[in-house]
Each structure stands twice: as C-alpha cells, then as structure tokens.
Image (cartoon, rainbow, N blue to C red; front, top):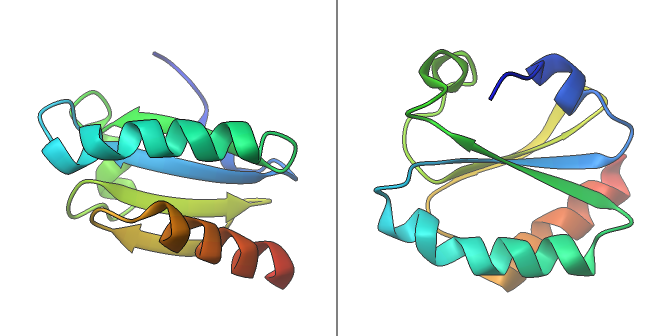
Length: 102
C-alpha cells in the first residue's frame, strides 16, 4: 500500500490513525470497536489503519513505540495520542474533547 501520509493527515476532517500489528492481541481486540466508532462518526471522522510491520519507517517517524498507538490529526496537526488498548468510551471522550478544541 502506497500513500502520502502528509496528505492523509492534512484533511480538514478529524483523522484517527491506528498504528497496529497483525500479531498484536490488543490491536485485534480494538478493531471491532474502531469500526463501530467509524460508523457512528462517519460524518466527522476518518480512521486509517496502518500496519507498523509494513510501514516501519513511518512508525519511527511518528514516534510509535508500541502498538496499538492511536494518533488523532486535523489539518496536519497532532491533537491527541494514546498508546495501548482503549475502551470505546475512552476513545469517544478523547474525540469529543479534540473536536471541541479545533
């Protein structure tokens, strides 16, 4: 998969980047929750899933030290970051706070 990360995160829409790995249990456990949030927030949020094993240089550039790492961007600016598993309510709370901050 080839993509331009800078273009991806520079959108006016909130963009949540999920840095994950296929071998990561917490990452796999969070996938259905992320899909639910994507559906519920379809008009306000885009979620991009990036495998750190396929995009190692990007993970290093973004200072991803462990998986899962979620980073929320808008217009190229990092608004929020979380390393480790997260509950749906925890994610929604962060999204609401970040959405109000921009």
